[in-house]
Image (cartoon, rainbow, N blue to C red; front, side, top):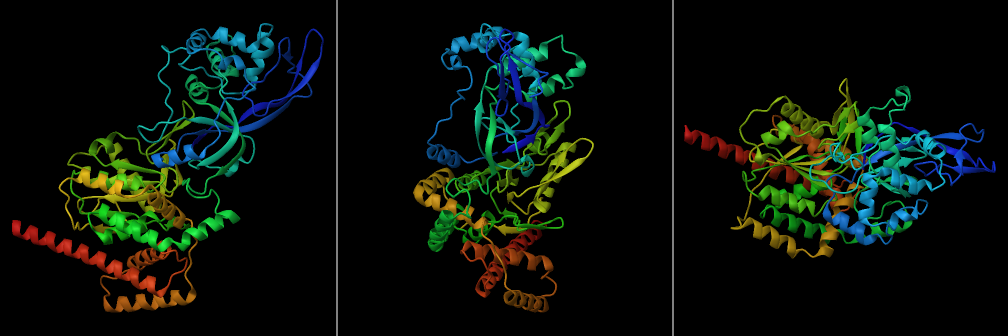
Length: 568
């Protein structure tokens, strides 16, 4: 995922080297390289008329936040090629032992000598590397006792995996922050980058006017290639979805065959998924229906500032401080490509960084919890909330969650102003009573079974489902999000007449919000059955589900009032 976009950098696309002894000249291409290379007894002619300066864009990329373990495993098993460092770099790097590597890190001059060759000229080859404009900075791996640990800037706490600097040479304006990319390119882990950048940062001979970057910016923009490798892009495209079980592009002929075959067996898959989620929700089939609709929901368009298609569900009636909500999250984790469980405690709300902010000293975007890839499932566990005082940061975090749910946007903090970043996050709120946060739909949980040991119940439920069946569930949920949907003029007219009749029969409780929500439920009901248009049957089924859901809420309200009156 693109976590940040650095300033464009200039590099020598074409440069000329000259041998001072023979005056022989050789043209080199600088594309797909981090440093300008020249052979022994050669210097780069900085005044050559053949020199061409070009521009490239650098993206700082991190693993997809909250990516599920099954997704990682699927990509690993599908990948046949092993990634290895480019052969254009010094092969002796691969022959040295670990102890020698440590020695090179402690004595950078040795490694530089190896890279440049015994006859290399420090001015002829060292200076052009600086002019290559790879952001000049050293890092604490070279001087372990002098610098704090490098922050890889992952949005979610506890995330693991490699970050990388992706260098794009063309069409970089087609990509945005938070896009998930598939990249084919040249991997660069040249250790000389750390050496050169460290020497540049520590050099006292540099003119301050030639080095406008702060030490912190240099350190962040040029981390050691052993920690943050570079990828020079040959081909890159934005992923349509994050599910490795689906074809990357559904418009190709082979993909259409795959989709057609899967749609032919959609009905039994939906029935099995409904049964699985009903057991997960302790026998509550109505809640399971709404959970399916929630999991296939997606923002399909925006009308002015209003996101269309979002369907945030508040699952109320969850046991307080129990492992039930954790169990629900574990089930969702097994079904969706990316997810995160946010425990809404006073501690987390007051101390966690939800909103990404711009660090002008390091010239980078510092990540926050709400910097997530499109279609990530965010489970907000409100059952963890206890009495306490929210400080200023906590209030801002609650407001950020509200904006995310209502408008599907996050306002990134740029100190002097805020910048809106649209998003498409599926939010499920689990709570004891009605949530403090806004939602599109509240479903009151009504357990039909109370297992004596929740942990054993969850484990037995997960082991009872075959991996092949789980994969069908995963394909089902991802595929239905990508289908087009429409309502015919005839059905639209029938829905309008039906709604007018509903208002006549119950003018006080039926509102425009009810029509909007019922249309959403009808949309996702149709898609869940593989139908891309609304039928009369699905509209009536949507009305029935909504009636059952509202009846539960009314019943819960009456029970609550009755309990309060008895206490008085």
